[in-house]
Length: 108
Length: 114
Image 1 (cartoon, rainbow over the protein chains, first blue to last red):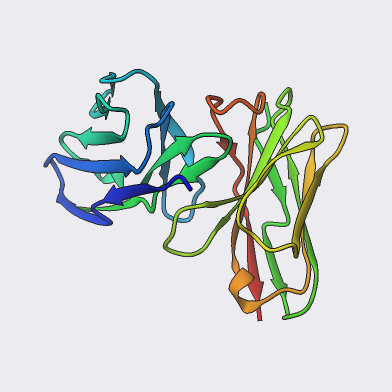
Image 2: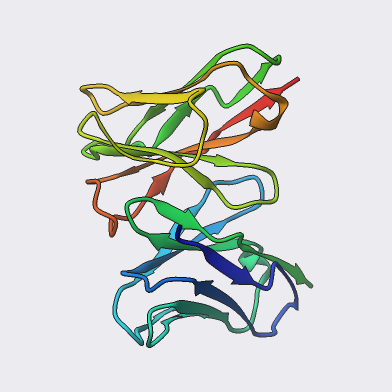
């Protein structure tokens, strides 16, 4: 079945630094969605990518869909404490298949 | 407008018991999906319902069942509870059953099985 792998599993970031988390699929994806889950909270939709090579930005967050539509990345610039949480990529087929997530901890 | 609401918020059961979790989707949304999230892992898909029909089922045993009502609310039932069923159960609603729809999640029901 469809699998989505995310790396790294954990990301400790100094406040103000940049980091990137990656999402890789074993199959070609029709689209990919990213969600953020704050500690103790529930997943909240961030973005959806549909086109090959697509790049979308939300303030300090930059999302990219790979040319082969098998991978995606999320890059956060100038990390803030509000960025703490787990970022999930999902393969949106007839069901949402979540990756294991990247847990982001920010050191002030 | 109200978001996705789930009840109860917390639940404690013992092994072998049965549990029913409830979900009300966002007004106008016709699809409801259920996910199980074990601590430290990503949500795992259990079921999707659209217009009262089951549209998808994840790799969960037959002890798990669900249904959707005419008002699009949904219930998830788990029979013969096991310790491993302890998890956060998330309900998500979307406008239709289309894969490109955004999923809006409720706050979840935290189930503890003792």
